[in-house]
Each structure stands twice: as structure tokens, then as C-alpha cells.
Length: 174
Image (cartoon, rainbow, N blue to C red; front, side):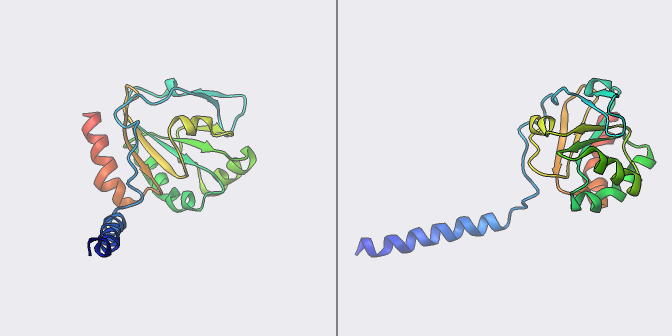
């Protein structure tokens, strides 16, 4: 008699786990780097291959690092939001062009506008790997000491800016 209930109990437990899993937001992927020092890197610029840019060149203030690519549809979706943010001057926005062809990236920025204070060119994606990037776009908020304060996977939206990113910028900029 006990053996006939076992498959039913297992089925109910699996359905419960599936039900809980379906309520989770797939964009809320915790990053083990939040609260830790951001990886140091030195890369060429997107627009100028002879220009070398380094994470240590970033001013000692809170800044946003947006990982993007010309082949990324969601990057196009968030682009105007980042452009408006950059124009506001509230926080500097830096780009990390991820696994892209330089000519395509330059063409993309020429076509849609360049919101980035500087844009780093990460052709092989190694710096992206150091940051734990598994897809684009991803955005990191980093403080003046190089500590990652926040990570968002997916496009930046006006709601995300107003409800999460900008309050953190104000909090950590004092």
C-alpha cells in the first residue's frame, strides 16, 4: 500500500518545485561579484584601436559599465535609455563591447549615437568572462573604489533606472 503512494508524493513535490520556479524572475540572477572588487582590465577602445583604455582610468566616482554588442537586439532596445542617462550627467556610462567585430561596433555607434564616456573593445570576451557575463546586455554599477554595487542582466529600462540604479547612485555618491 505504501509503494502506491510514493509516485504520487514524488509527483506532488516536483510540481511544487516547478510552481515555485515559475514565479522567479529569470533576470534576477545573483552575481557572486556584487560586493567585491571589479576585475581590472586594459583594452583597446572601440573607435580607436591604438587607444588603450583601462578600468583604472575611470574617475573615483560611481560609474555604470554596460556590456553591449552590435548584434544584440536587446542592446538596441536599451540604447535610448542609456543615451538619455548619459545626457543627464547623473552617472558616467562606460561601454564594454563584447565579442563583436570592431567595424560593426563603430558603425552601430555612428548610426544610433554613442552614449559612452569611453567604450572598451573586448573582441574575445575575456573581460566579459571575468565579470561573469553570460549574455548581453548586462550592466554593472561600480563605485569609485572599484567595488561592484549592482548587476543587471537584460536591457536597462526607465523603471529600472528610477527604482534601482539611480537610488544606488545617489546613495553611494553621497
